[in-house]
Image (cartoon, rainbow, N blue to C red; front, side, top):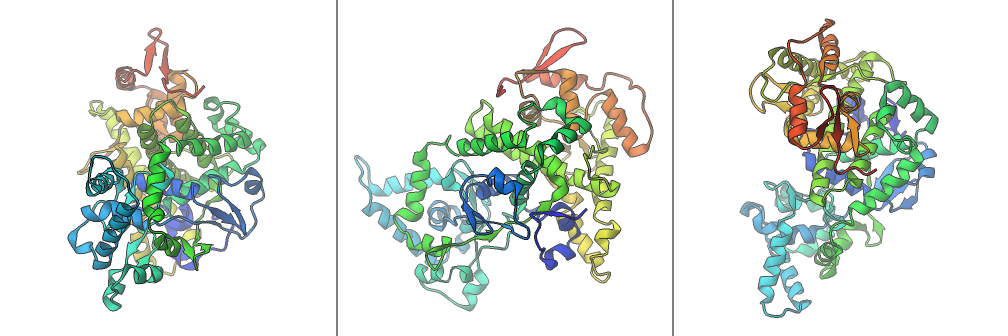
Length: 536
């Protein structure tokens, strides 16, 4: 149950001491925001990469490499730090006590270099620079309360993808520094680049899940799709991993070309055009060799949810929607995939089954107002049971045996709080699939944003029957909405079968779809869910 992709020798400190990392991969971490999961996924995809000295720059490894991945060889990628761009964009809005003198001096130097390389007509160069600074500040993504270098951009183009860099205040106090040139010449002393506090490797796990899924044999995919029921919601093309690999590779490239190239060109110019010595030190070793970082790993068994994730990402990338909504939905896809991964892998671990796994867990969805008390209670019960399932999964004997009894209490407390069931709750609350944000009585619900995500990712053509849509939501994400699914959800938590409910339990769901313009009723017994952004 603890096989990894890539099949590499694991770091004993991380692997043996953290039971959640053992089970879910390196690593899914509660301090990483939803936007940072997506930004890190795209950072891996659009950075130069290497496997066993085979270098490539395409978003995904070649299909041949995926099929014949070298044993004991990890994926490496070389992200750009973009310190000049982040300094130019974020220093002015960062806290005063985080602005070191070398940072302020270097920003003045960048401003002067920009003026020297600038021709203006009808305005002052100073105003143009401030306008550009405000422009890039407008693309600020996450980490607004952090030091300028630990912040990140909304990933709308390749020029906004950057590695995590943390200013080492402790080192600066011990070894004072007076010039920016000295700072970057000793880059890894004054900046931390491998602590993974915010870009905490969750995006790496998501990227590897896609790679792991696309390397499976077509016969295995077909058999799994048939036995799990997934086949009914996928097209014949999407069931071909080679076709999906090619299309997803192309879709990733197109995603980063939607934003005008001028934005990336301007970002690159500020970062390394007017002053290139910084990037020489941060992005390269000895100014010539790319500074690679090792990617983590994911469980081999997670290829099944990874394949669903790959299809969902592909459908979002090809949907007829604008860039910001596309990124918003991709962010939602990352969050939903983490919830699904935690539940699937936990269920898999407790059941001991890995072949063509059809999960038993269900997330019972209650109406947003909670008017149906019986369904509201089932929803609460399934949420508690999901938390217990994740809690129990990282405590199975095979995992516990790797942790010293002396350290066990402390290790599990940390695993629960930052990697386990509380990670599930935190992400679920962020996207609004679990309410309330604070207080008791937590339960599963849907909001308009999640509803739109479900329509775009589950309806591949222009329309799908309402019953097929509910079935796809249950198979893909474990969402129990109608009478039969809610009965299965209640049986999962209590072994009690409910034959009928007092009223039609999914009536609110139909009304929500209809109000959003996604439902067209043909008769009292037949309705269609329509996807206005469908790709086929």
